[in-house]
Length: 414
Image (cartoon, rainbow, N blue to C red; front, side, top):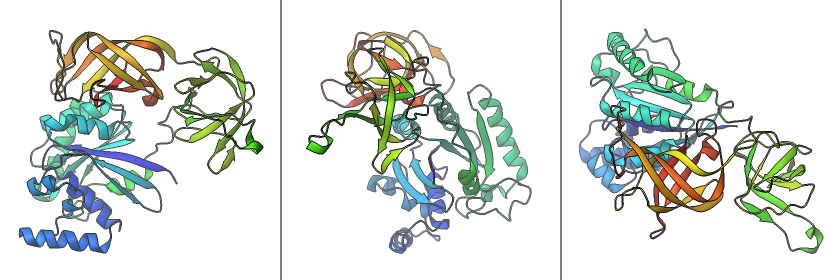
């Protein structure tokens, strides 16, 4: 059974947490004691209905203020699919949390309040999800009950958003009118909107095709760990463990090792459950090779005629995540790319991007918290990179502050 990772985004009070609560509640994915606690809290607050948003707003500050701050992950399953939800915050000061939640998502749900329409926040989140190359986008027009389930209002919002989305790289865009509070079109089709002929949100999530989103063309296997058991019966075993970042690997395939450029064949592919005949993203496997090659963590196994770029200078879009320091030219940082860690120098800041207007400010001298810009980096060792648009695993990296060891930036290689 495959897993769909999706992120929810949208402006404050658009009903993201209520929507997730409704999905969990209507798909019978919550326990009775959780429901009782939510009903009790709802009563204590004097709300006339069970406030399902309390299921996801886990931090006390979120419940008290009625907002989402951190990225909350929730898990549920239906007979068709397993789901991992990243509930990301709507406030502008939590852009970094939204980037974190969306960076691994297969699909993003952007909620829009039917009364307010497409806000600056909705545009920003749509831009960020396309910047992060989330392959599928669902625009859920929420609170339809507050506009009398009006088809005209839904069409207005759809028209406005479609015009904006034409400037973005949105490949798959779906519009669904919902009421998270009442459950219209969330798990089952709504009788209040007979004019809408499409699927419910859950039906769309269960059936959206994600198998072809992962790159199955370019073989990329960053080596994470070299396995040399010390027990006598396995003393000649040498395997290379890691997660497949692209392509399909089979025993007998010709492969090349980077940085050496030496070629060999795959002898076998082992997993926790035993040997397999093929490996593809995002499987974690151990490769055994026919020849002894000096391979260590951070190296890359690929195809001889299809190699990533070997680069010590990269251009990237960076989302800056630190509130104590700014990103400015000449800054020295640690870069972590796949399984390789190196030191990096910021050579140049080309521009800062205004996420709301898409304007490029070329006079910018630094990036502050939650700002996004285009940067050139020089790296102490070669990295094996692909364009982020082609492979999110080998095209993405994080930047780490050498003094505090905290993650200060996330980057997408151009």
